[in-house]
Image (cartoon, rainbow, N blue to C red):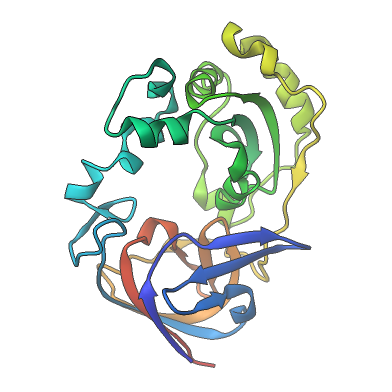
Length: 265
């Protein structure tokens, strides 16, 4: 079997364990069905996710010109505390920014390697947690806009990490924690503007990933430096494909790369 297309973040759904789908222009792959099969990845060229041109990818699947101009890549995307749509202030495109920023957002705790705090749109739960490889997660506050979520995350970062240790996550070097207790410890640090939105009764969500064998050590596949790779797929966690030799490939970090994928066995 042979597939060819531009990489985008794998789509997911939760059933007994997370199901992963790679969507091509005219086809799709359920990666769960490829576990324990030998597959190959071959880098062919770049294709910007915005302009569609064959230009080197800079960040987030966009070429440099698009990344520095389109509203989808504004600074507020990575730093939600910089959001200004609630003040009717434009960054790059106020209409787009109002749609994206002026909707319910959640500040959460996710446990993928260690407990971390994060922000996402309400509509992206549990997708955001899956993408981070979290085996358990819980909401802290649900606020009406991205700015309030951003300042809450900033306040809580002084007391809990906002980073994921991807190596620990992929080797399954994790601890199960009581996230309801962890949330209660952080309650006192929530900014005054967001305290009324505290979620005291939400229960933690548990997530099971389709991994048949976790590697003892991981090595990241760079398709730009090494355009061809083949190996036996042993699992998927976060947005990573995990192979039998300890190689891992972050699909999301390689958005905008056109690849050929073959199922060899």
